[in-house]
Length: 94
Image (cartoon, rainbow, N blue to C red; front, side, top):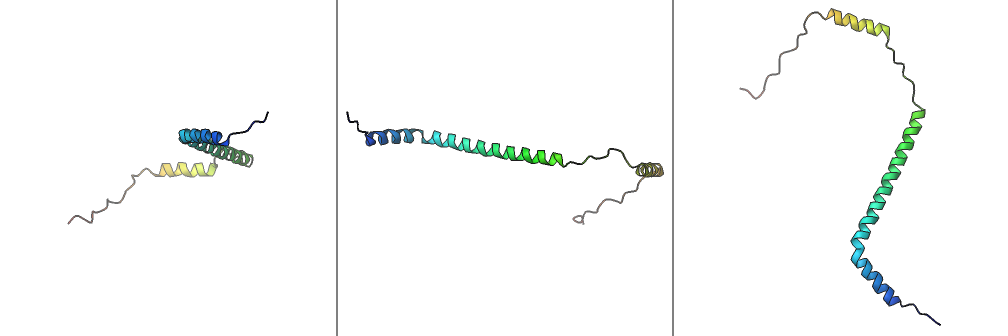
């Protein structure tokens, strides 16, 4: 009733399996590692955004009335055309 384990047979079959499928195993392992790393980065990014959302300040959407009046005066005073300087001279022209 004694059963013995044949280690040579097991090692031959496992080495045949690895020699046949080592490229596929490597690609699957690499894809799993990259997708795990990507999920961790997304989780960290989402948790950082959620903590910053709690610290957000409410911005008042109304404008300062004195600034609006000054802009309107600027628009009404600019009736004359703007004069721009002449174009640059080309230093390579003789």
